[in-house]
Length: 288
Image (cartoon, rainbow, N blue to C red; front, top):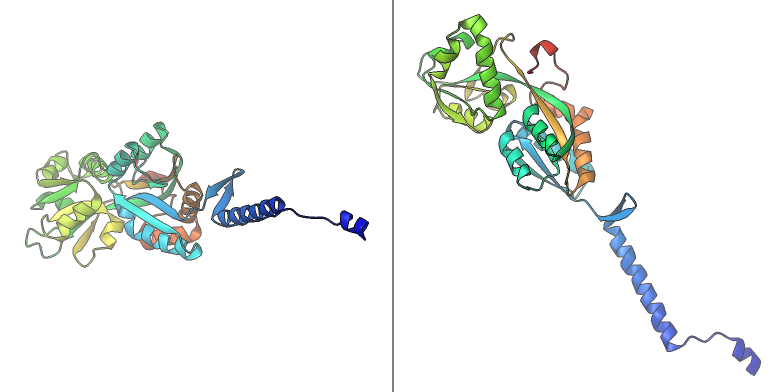
């Protein structure tokens, strides 16, 4: 009997202590792992927040796409920063934290690519410009684009803003059809140059200006307050909208999911519902 007892394993107090420690560590690893995901062979914090910088004209479409994305990813928070493209670019260049940037033109996106702030932009939508006229403005009637110089007060985008640059291009193109002085006659009535398209729309909607150049998508949101004058196709431009993941994105997995969602059939449908054109538009109407 004594020999059998000598063969039986005996756990000392120190061994028991080490066993409990090992078990506790396993529990901690399991709990920690539940809040992490593996990326490139390394554990990274779970991505539950996405920061999207987007041109002001994308507000309705991106909000709808965001709601759709969150339905498939419960618990994810999406933070939008809608503003003028030039303002968003400046914020990114000064270190603002964002995961995705969607621009209303290629020029500002190209500047960020050159500075290595974003990578591999993709055109995801296009937009058409229109002139909006305040309803019941009491000023001279504007029935078509050719009547624009008769407006009492006109508001346009600032030169550094995509909507302002597109407007300038349209006025340059208008000379061949409406006369060499058409641009000068329109500019003589300009009373304000705004920093984003929503500010242009607000001035017209509130009656502070009789007419303004905006995107068709923005006009679609205010048909109860403004009348839309189409711009002749031969002088109009088509705005191109590129999207890219920010190089230093804190949430790269969600950033990729967002871009994929925008480019998906469901995302493109939301953009069309908001009035956007698809990524491919007739070359003869594309803005250079």
